[in-house]
Structures are given as C-alpha cells and as structure tokens.
Length: 118
Image 1 (cartoon, rainbow, N blue to C red):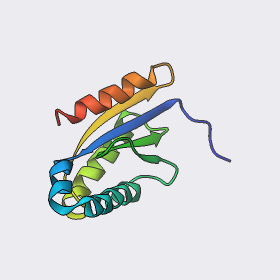
Image 2: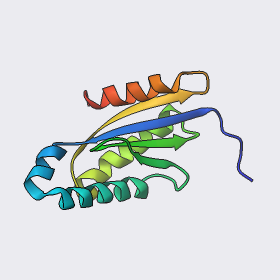
Image 3: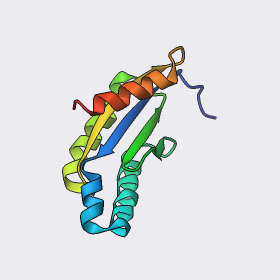
Image 4: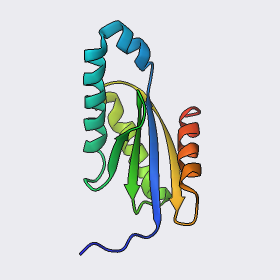
C-alpha cells in the first residue's frame, strides 16, 4: 500500500533552447521527433509515478510527488548532469516547490520565471 503524501511536491519547468529556429531549419517533423525524444529523456530521469507534461510548444513540466526542496534539487542536478550526453537538445530549467497550503499557480509561475534566469 502506498504511503500518504507528505503534502509537498516539486515541479521543474523546462524550456528547449531556440526551438523555433530548430524547427524552421529542420522542419516540423524533425521538431516533433525532438519533442518526443525530450519527453523520453525526462521520463528516464524521474520515477514512474511522476508526471512529465508538455505545456507549450517547447515547454515541459515535471511534477515530482512527495518531493521536498532537497529532493527536487537532486532531480534538477541529475537532469543537468545527464543533459550534455543524453538530452536531444539544450534546455533551460526552473524549479518550484509546493506545500499543501500554497497556491499551485504561484509555484508554477515561480518555476517558469526561474527558468529564464538559470
């Protein structure tokens, strides 16, 4: 039986670098293939019960279950370490952490805005 959630979760917002230019140069079919490869890259680096969601043209959100700040940062470090050799394209990431009492939209906004500054 699965333990009750602690009420904390983390989210990692990722934005593929220069995806529009990549799409324009290589075509939409190749761009679509990169999006699939990126989703698979992300899924390989998180637990099976965690969600990898495409939220925009070149944006992904990873939702980490029962993940405190240290655990979320550990996943970010793991993704960053793996990226140079196994991510299909470069990306920016941002991190948000959520406690059960905080507004979800604020956490997602924070994760998205921090991706611009990393």
